[in-house]
Amino acid sequence: MKLNRISTVMVFALAASLALAACGKKEEAATPAADATPPPAAAAPTAPAAVSVASIDLGNAVGADQKVTTATSNFTPMDPIYAAVSTSGSGTATIGAKWTYQDGQTVKEDSKSIAPTGPATTSFQISKPDGWPAGNYKVEISLNGQPAGSKDFSVK
Image (cartoon, rainbow, N blue to C red; front, top):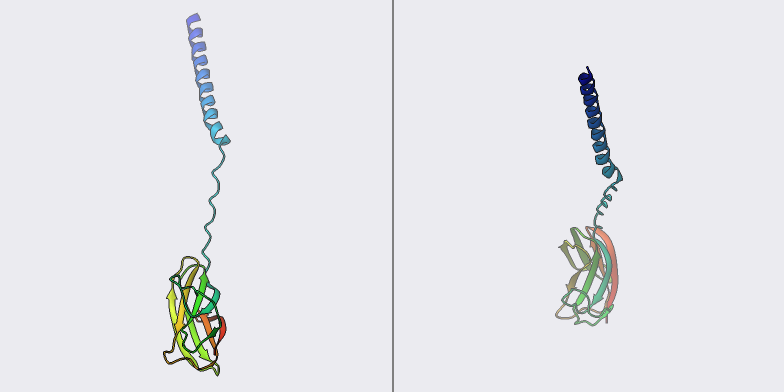
């Protein structure tokens, strides 16, 4: 009987030890996860800004970057005339240039498709080998068919 009692006590002790050991392991495993800081939230990507006209410059020459080398609004009859349209943003767009003489007579219309990924410059040019008549002129710039700005200039 004494042996039976010792066996029962031993089985009970062993079962209690296993139960405590199992509880301790679960608690240890849960503790690091509870203390871990969650990863930082990823920043939402921002959509690139649509193309917009930043400025329009006139001159009689442009550099390799399509920007006017010396801005002016007064030209001689033999000058080529450039309009450099600076844009910001990214995407696809169509820039139009309509050149008119003082009474509204169209001198030239032109458009160019662009697909910038940031600041860009697009130039337009008119020239007349036998010379421009003296007077007041205007270039009207459009972006995707909508007015985006204009510049007045004169030929003297």
